[in-house]
Image (cartoon, rainbow, N blue to C red; front, side, top):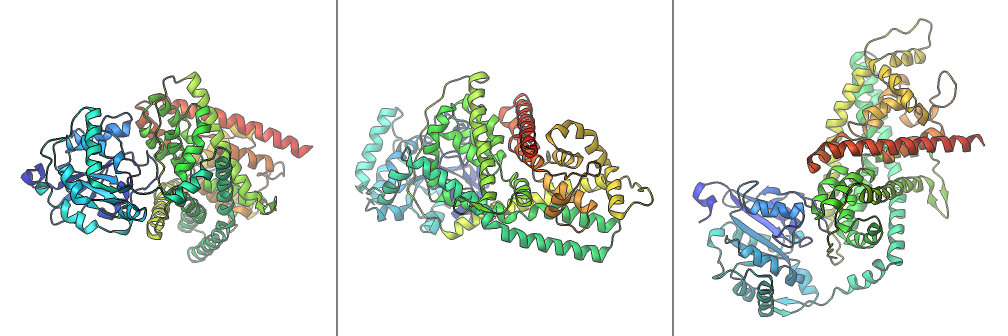
Length: 629
């Protein structure tokens, strides 16, 4: 009898399976949660729990994908620790998940689970694909051979989920194998072969579409060229499709600010709500269309199976830097955010490769940098086309992403040779068939990321905007009499607490072409990179009331020299600085947690700041010289 039955505690079900077996999709179907789905190992790196709607309290635990209970990597070690009850109460029953089209690859793992001596069932996913490819499994015979219940489902379509729920409600009634499979690896393999031969009536044919596409996408030359083309189109779309929606949002926020100003006047409360809250948060929210498009394309490429092929193609390049394909998974995750990217390194079994990947992950251009890039590119890069219709703005954005990726590879190569030594362990990558995701699954993924961005805007960015408004507004300094209104606002701003801090640090960044306003934005962006945009928005909202931020940046002139503040050299220097600098406290915190030391986060902060400062200085000097010639 299970511990849950004896104590009245909720039934705990452990969900286990190999990477790309459909385990997380099944978890979502059972619980209604929207856990991340990916087509390669290393996406789910922490245990995930969700409640089940059964006739008794029940919790299902989604564990990281693994091929074995003999751990090589930290995420595989997590599975063993959960099953042993070291992290939380051990599961009362185990739900093994296997792809029906490749059952032979899962049976060795199922054999290890059966030796755990607790109620176990097997869920076969992608049953529709098995039938479509002409395969046939005798489920009653498979149940008899294994000695446990077997259910076939199609998780993303909900087929078989009701039958599975009924089964999960009564694990104490599940049949158990009379004898556990042999323990020795060779004997387990023979056992798995006998089970398969008794139940598999007809092997599924090859996935002809996948086979044909892979001849192109995995080709050493064509595959690399297609990957480059996909990335080029990707970044072109971000500007071409998102700019109209971004402009509409900008106009709506401008109208809301004008209405709030008219209703509240120019007193302290009005300044706080308009210049602090609306200007600060709104300046970041306006980039929601571009961020949404970024995630929409990324998730589509992942769900159809292309990103697994990209990992295979890029693995050749990463091998020259001393990294392997699992590092690509972590670095790809860092395009969304460095925090989950660093956490995804738990799938890397080599401690050396894992540490190197953690140290270079911040160089991958995360979505938090996108508002900064989009603001500066939209304001200062002409919206013109070259080379037969390629937008210059999209090309500049692509160049920034490529610059960060190349820097990550070069840094990994140097770190591997100079600082971190050790052996590289073998990498196995399973290529799934190409599949079209359902519109519901894909849209929920995109919405989940957008909602996460909005929560960030409503928490971190809102708090930072409120704090910054106080620092920009106090002490209340009276400007000298006779100054025009605009100059009086600028005088009060420069003598605020934030203005004094910006002026105090400005000499440090002056060689990069940054004035005190940009310096203050860099300082504030350590809370979150997007805060750079909200900081500039608040500064210019206070100084130039009613002006759209992009116009205010273009028209800002230094009062002493009379030259524009944002020259081409300054803009290029600032973009390059954001490519390389580690401007994120959350990233440092997760580095500390994953390395169990402040030594490596401090090292990452230091070497990336030095790299950013040097590259930014060189860029400013070069572009300034070109401008004078």
